[in-house]
Length: 406
Image (cartoon, rainbow, N blue to C red):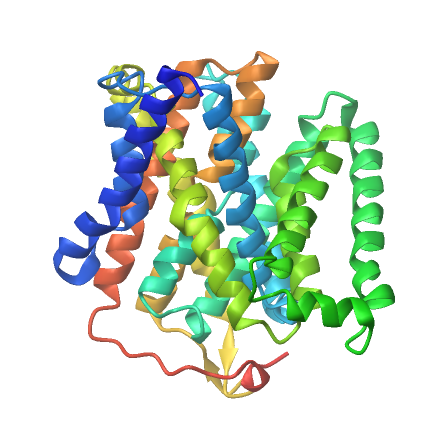
């Protein structure tokens, strides 16, 4: 490790260690830790003080952090919800968001220069589920009806933009990219079938894995990391985004452990949120060109408004039709619908991914990418805070999934 890498890693880790202490010091934990990590990245990064830089070694940690973030997101999802009425409603809502995004972006392009219209439209439809998970966990919402609805919209808002990005922004063209995506999905399904074939609960292999779970072997953690890295390598071979691989790994892990596993979840949480995920958020902040953003405040404001209109408004309308008590009453009042819409509008990792692809391909400028990323960072800062303030004084009952209407 060179001196430059060591110094950069020190400042990144220092930011990661300081952020939760500062977040805890804010009354009511109104300031999400994720936001502090982003701000710290801006301060120490090349567009701030310049005391840290993203080297190839740190970039690898960033990629692993992104992968673990979305693996845990895929693992947390209730797959029954995604194929139920809530998931179907979330998918229909996202398709409406995409249509509105294309209409809005191409309309604005008639009066002002917007390059990479397709990439911009896709970025506007995303929801930062990986970013929301720690925020929802801190606020005790994950197991509530509202939390499950947010997770449904978040899952679709992460998966569908990635698929759209793979198809519409792929170097092979739409048809070729769709074929490659289908081949990857087929391979992932085959991988998912392996544990059930060779690792039944009474098999010798399962016994070895269980016995090594709490020893220095840490077999469960190592196999999970192997699953993640293996699918990332497969996605790289297919020229697909890492997020697809990470989500697939999370789904496969949940299929292998349908009732969950407290020990493994604790260890993965320590590995992810102890180092790699904070590194991802700090380095994401380091990529924000502050001068470029400050120099065009009207474009930044427009990007935030478009995120609210394209993503937040359709979700607000869609939640009006969700029912509770077997269809006898509306599931959410207007304030709760506003909370769900605000949480669903938060976007960052997908915006980073889409803009990175668009900049590398050429049509999007680095300044426009920074403005979109900054808009996503502001949504992470402001919208969950507003949603929390709207929900002050509420105690929502945790409702079992089997009480939800299909």
